[in-house]
Structures are given as structure tokens and as C-alpha cells.
Image (tube, rainbow over all chains, first blue to last red; front, side, top):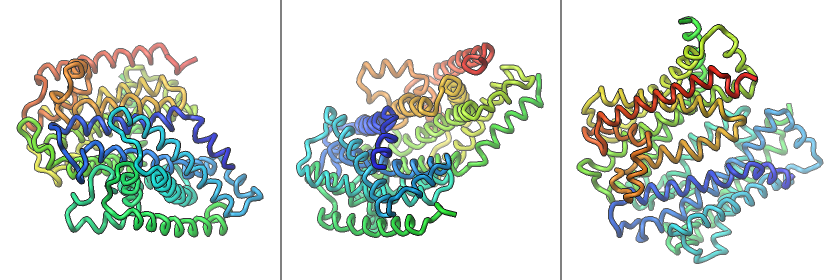
Length: 245
Length: 253
């Protein structure tokens, strides 16, 4: 099942790999052109150095969100989702299959985007293991959320709504583009309540050594959120939520 | 002229996107506001002004135009694409309606979506930033001519693409980059010389620049020249689409 998910994701690699890369490069160049003088900083780093790790994070998380949910909704529409429900797999094994695919896909996309950003100012990671941890944790968190979305959604419309109205705001406002110190004091608690913030911050810490929050706290928050989401997804698969009628 | 036929097809085109208005109208508005938020929070205090106007005032019309471009394109391209994949494109090709009438209805549908999104996005922007509306006629002209341009491009894309993958590729690799890099976020004076030169051949640039000129009163290019480019490009695209429909390119076998 893991193999099937991976094959499905990368059959259209032109889209799954090239599209996020192009988008990351676009964001990087747009911000680069807007900044009209040298020495513009964000959170103590040159602006692009601050931005690029965020773009890697966005690309990895976006892939992760799209992996399981799209696969599940597609299967539902084709009427072959029952094939999954019928497999001699325990709910836990199904969850692992989807989640493992999300995480590997995100790591691949993250690596490709990171490599593509190298020529325009990307940096070698300062803490490679931490980097892999945060990308994987982020991918797992979003991947599990993606499974919930996929199970909940009957149609593509629902999926796209979740992506536009929940996923994108969470990601875009998580400190990808700005340090949350820039936000008004009223908005800061909200930013810190956003689990995606800790992923982005952790990834930035691993690449540049600079963080808004303590990375250990971030890792703890990620693991906590993952545990909760895992339980939810497990319950959904075990109870056959919107799978078996 | 088969008015009833044109009206019916137009009506369908509009109903098609209104039915899923959360994706076709609400989603672009949310995305526009998100973009505004990230750029203003990240850059407002760092960039200050573009020319003589504050960065955010410069940014807002650019973002509205970007949504117009993307939505007009999405409307016609996805409509034709879905019809092709589901096989009901014959229902549009069979009735006694000329190529000209057919494309008018599609383009009008795309423009309608572009305008609804434009009005909604502009309204949202006025809550966030104090926008001057220097010349309403200029704003309208560029909004509509740009919308027509992208609706026509959407038809070309929809007719040409065989699969959704192709469509996604055009959107990701052509439409989005062009709408990002054509002066939505910065004045092209910021670009290196070679790119400034290239930008002069990019119709998206004139659309964005002219639209913004309607708000802030001046642009990178001359107004009349920009208007002329838009009309010229619309005309050329119109002829291309008309030829495609008349010859049945990729539609009739």
C-alpha cells in the first residue's frame, strides 16, 4: 500500500516536484525584487536567508497535505475506496501506510526545493538531523490531518475548501514570511497556538540556527499534536467513519 | 445572431461557477487577503514606498489584478476541460450556434467571474488599506480587457489540453509565474535592464500596470500605449480562438 501511494504521487512528478519548486522560486524572486535596498533584515537575518527555509517548509507541508487526502477522495469517487477498507490490514497499518507515504513524499519535495534554492542563497543545514526531524514531524502532522480531511470529504469541493480556508491560512500565517515578533501583541498568542508555526520555526532553526521559539518546545508541541491526530485518525479508520455504510 | 443560444450558454457558464462559489469567489478573496497580509506584515516597514506611493497602496491593485487574471483563465479553461473529459462538449458543439457566438458566451462567462472577484477583492482591500480611486474608467477598462485576454487564453488552454495534468502544468508554469512576475508586487524599474526589456513584451505587465494606474494615477508605461497593447492582444487572441473553433481543432474529430 505504501508503494502504491508513492507511485501514485510521483507518476505526475512534473507537477508534484516541479510545481512547488517553481512556486518557491517565484516567491523568492518576488520578495527579492520588492526589497529595494541591501541590508533588509527579518528577525536578525538577511531577509532572503529568513525566507528560504520557510519556503522549503511550505513546499514540504503542501505535498503532505495533498498526498493522503487526494488519494482517499479519488478512491472514493472511483468507488474503489472499499478496496482499502477490505484489505487484511488493521486500522493502525492503514494509517501507517498513508502516513509513511506522506512523510517520504514531503522529504523528497523538501529536498528538491531546498536544492533548487541553493543557487539563489539557500544555505547548508546547520543541524541536518534536526532538519529531518522537523520536516518529518511536520509532514506526519499534516499527513494525518490530510487523512482526516480525506475521510471527511465526499467530494473534491470539500477538499479544496479545507485547503483554501484552513490549510493555507495556517501555513501562510505561521511565520513562513515574517518573524512572529512582527505581529501585533494581540495576534502573537494566536500565532504561537498554530502548530505549523513550530514546524516552520524548527526547520528555520535547523537551517540557519535562528528561531522564534525554543526548538525543544517546538519538538514537544509537534509530537503532542501528532499523537492526538494519530488517535483521531485511528478511531476514524477503526470505526469505519464514512467508509462503511 | 442566435441570441437565445448565446444567452443560454452564458447562463450556464455563470451558473457553473456560482454553484461552487466557495471555490470560485470566496477562495480567491481569502487568498488575496492572505497575500496582502504576508506581504504587508513582512515588507511594509522594510520597503516604505514604491515611487511616491506607500508599498501597500502599490500592492493592493496588483493583487486584485492578479486574482482577475487567474480567475478569468480558470473559468473558461476548466469549463472546456471538464466538458471534454466528461464528453459533453458535443452538447456545445452541436447546437446551431456559430463559433463567434460560442466564444462570446464563454468569454462573457469568464469576464463575469473576473469582475465579481474583482469587485469583491477590491472591497476587501478598501478595509485594509486606503485606496485612491483616481480614474474609474481606466480601472474598468483594464479590468475588462485583461479579463477578456485571460478568458481567451483559458479557451486556448482548455481546447489544447488533453488531460487535467496539462491544464495544471499551464496554470503552474505559465499563468502563475506570469501573474507573479509582471509587476504585481514591484515596479519593473526594480528589475535588471534585460528583464525590463523583456517585460515590455509581456501583456500581463500592461494589464497590471494600467489597472494600478487607474488607482494611483501613474504607471511604469504610458496609459494609451498600454491600452493599445491590451486591445491588440485581445484581438489577436480572439482571432486565434475563432480559428481554433472554426476548424474544430482538437474538438471535432
